Length: 413
Picture: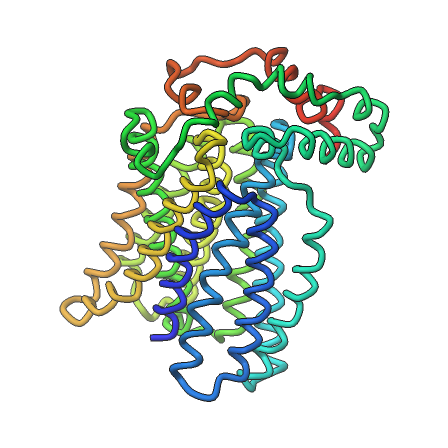
């Protein structure tokens, strides 16, 4: 019950934080989410009864969405195109580090209240460090705050050792080069745009299925650790360890073969591996565990790709809202995943068939998504509506925000 309520909180948080971030800014929502996580997660450790525990877990789940979505969007809108895939993978490795630390803490601190407190207190520190994070320049410009955008660019330029280049920028230059985007941003946008516009409708339907399938299959493995007959602490470490090679391989494929290819391969391989477990006898625990670990690695690669891919598919004016909608389908998948196991009472093969078929279907639908490798981020809905395969020249892209996309910035982060 508590786990399902937590996932419900993540779902609601995705809806709320996505809309608020597009309206009030990525940085503000990120800071608020960190503070909310710190407070509610700490309160969970002192919950006097089950009802209070569930309420705090719901709020913690909602704050988790604000943290994850705002982090992804800020990284996508700040990091130069050549480094975006690398940055996305490095962020994913932070999640892997957490998977290594958690079982160690759980082993050392067996009492759940103290364990909950130990993993909650650091979020107060994370909240304080958001003061140094720069707001998205793209969002600031499109919201009619060019002076603030210029200040952020010059601050980042100083940090990157390019103070002179930053000082050459002017508000007039930023406003002139982004005039079309500023004009477009003055028109109101809503969730309905994701389904009203044909190009966005196709993207939303396909990428939503990808999010659903990835989370659905991922939690089918993650929440059944004890079913593999291996020490749960050790298996948790193994599940975290497989992320290292999985995400390294994913970044290579993402950078050279493209986002779409990575998404399709990771999902189809994961589904195939899950289906393969049907033919493995239960007494071969090592082989079953090996297949589960490989499948988990494929799904981790899928998660790494879909966060980056989704951010690159949608325009700036509605990007965070779209991420929130996609996050809804991810949480629906995580909520339905444990319920499918109930069908195992009819036949033990039914849940496995469902868990394996869904990601294969999603991988097939991902083939209809446009490739975003080396394609500039779309600023407006009109950019998405352009003919598939059309690309702005690199020179045009540099003119928009010189500091962000200048060739000399490829070696900076």
